[in-house]
Length: 241
Image 1 (cartoon, rainbow, N blue to C red):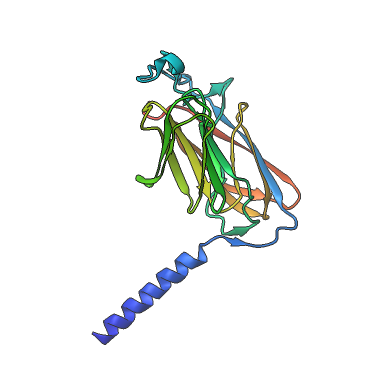
Image 2: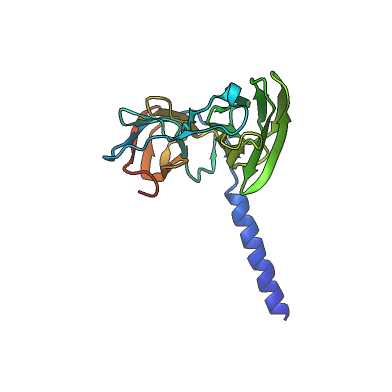
């Protein structure tokens, strides 16, 4: 019995030390490199957003509006979150508050990033009642009511993960905020481009995430101090096709 207890305590100690060792550690980065790249869609069938019919406040929101899920132009994919996987040390996270606006019955930005420890401001730019009901790991994270135009509420980003944004008053509204405990993440622009700066020299796996196209990894990406590494992610088909 005693030997079993000792083994169990040893196991728990190892697990706790392992989880501690993977926690992100801030350290000086004096000669960081840059990762830049593009996210492409090369499939023969380019997915298109379906039109949705707002079920409430049609006099303001309109009778039809696009989903804004697939923003693909000339083979370049917008709103893809790109990040370094399992990086355990480097520069501190930027102190850049995240913002989500309710604008014309949609979340702006539709896809964004945030950083653990920073603030998150919810804003209502519409003359309507909105609430931002957020989910992290399938559980409610924040549920914030914004009954009047111009109203703002600020919360704190307390843990990393992928947050889904919904509005209970307007169920067609959706969006995403990907929160990180390190600064090595970016979102692609309208040209499918992204830049991640001040990366400690080393070899990394980089991941791209899109809400419908899914995840793609690039392995063994070498970053050299003071230099720029260029990469390309490629999606070939929409999820489910």
